Amino acid sequence: MTDHYFTSKPSADKNEKKIEARLKGQQMTFTTDAGVFSRDRVDFGSQVMIEAIDERAFSTLEILDVGCGYGPVGLSLAKANPSLHIDMIDVNERALELAKKNAELNGVSNVSIFLSSIYEQVEKKTYGAVISNPPIRAGKQTVHQIITDAKEHLAHNGVLIIVIQKKQGAPSAKKVMEETYGNVTRIGLDKGYWVLQSTKTD
Image 1 (cartoon, rainbow, N blue to C red):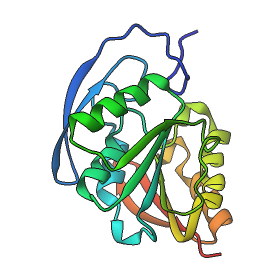
Image 2 (image 1 turned 120 degrees about the horizontal axis):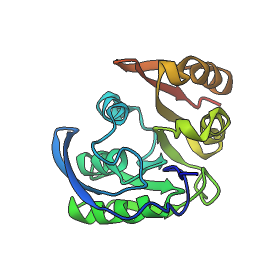
Image 3 (image 1 turned 180 degrees about the vertical axis):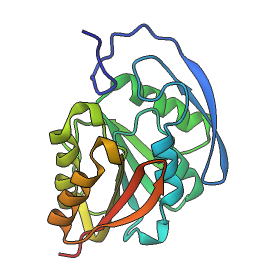
Image 4 (image 1 turned 90 degrees about the vertical axis):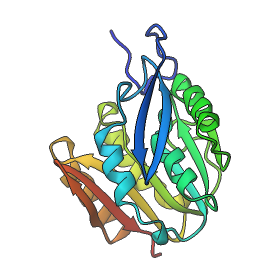
């Protein structure tokens, strides 16, 4: 059975390549590899989310990128906003090594990149935002856990922001966000990708 990008130790033979992307108004270069999510280009959903994010919604300067992959979301936000500090987590060890390499490649130092299966190794409770392009192939239960468990890591008025395609479960994710946070807004929409944002008010 072929492993997926949410495998801790991908077995696919390494085959690194460099890709370019313009994100948050900046030209970024990423080293990618086999066994990581969206190896050949920055995922369109991630691009839609990055451009939809309004950093003024963040209630603190501490941000968490869940399922960071090789780093396009967290690194582009960190580079565009030097005052932020972004913790970037993933279960895929190969992706994390690439994210660290890409932080250096793009001159980004205001990040911490570490291994965590969802929130297992996350200790902070005061993030101004939790951001995720969740691993759809890991299943609906995992996606919904990312949504619900983010709440205990958010500061008051912190926001959860996710991107998900309508055909891959955006309506049900929206319902879970509404039930968990009492509010949800669609802040971005492009080619079936919904960018959803909820605010922790209690």
